[in-house]
Length: 75
Image 1 (cartoon, rainbow, N blue to C red):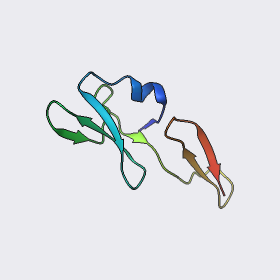
Image 2: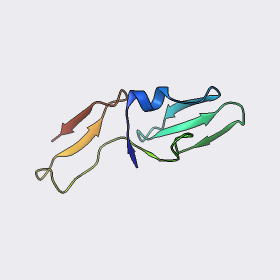
Image 3: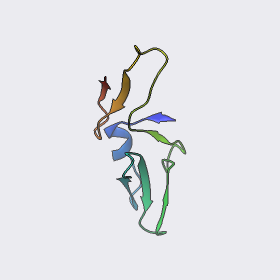
Image 4: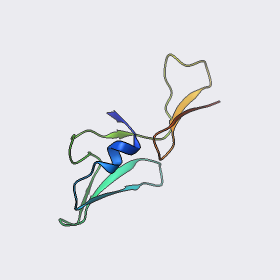
């Protein structure tokens, strides 16, 4: 999985856009084909969004990302 970044989202082919699911996950929309996918159309990777726990964070802390790709932490 790739980390969310504004650059990655701007680097979409012409007929593509993106949306954010109610769960905070980024999905990609192919307007021409009228289809969606969880995978970035150029890299083929899913984008990490929302909160996630990590072993290297203190107990109770989670890592999260804004829609612009900035990382922040939640306790």
